[in-house]
Image (cartoon, rainbow, N blue to C red; front, side, top):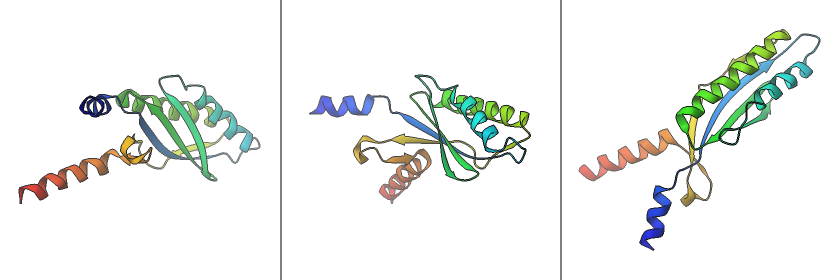
Length: 133
């Protein structure tokens, strides 16, 4: 049992990086230009950096990138944003990053629920302060 617990804790965790963006194009190409730009961003997806783009509510999209390498993942999602921006500007559209990319970790104990790294850090720190008092 001890070895299983140690293996779980030492195993690399999948990090999901999320970044909400707004993509608009009021030119005659319109939604076709947005689709083309988003597909260009999806082309940067690899086995190590899985990129997904989901529509939240028009014109807001959520870029998600799953990886085992968080620092390279931040750079990669920025590349995706730059590629989409470059492509949409060809058609006269705009891409606005609503929030900077955030890292989320998948925790096996919560059965796949996403936990923000910031929240996990704050919880850990507040737990330490509580023990000291």
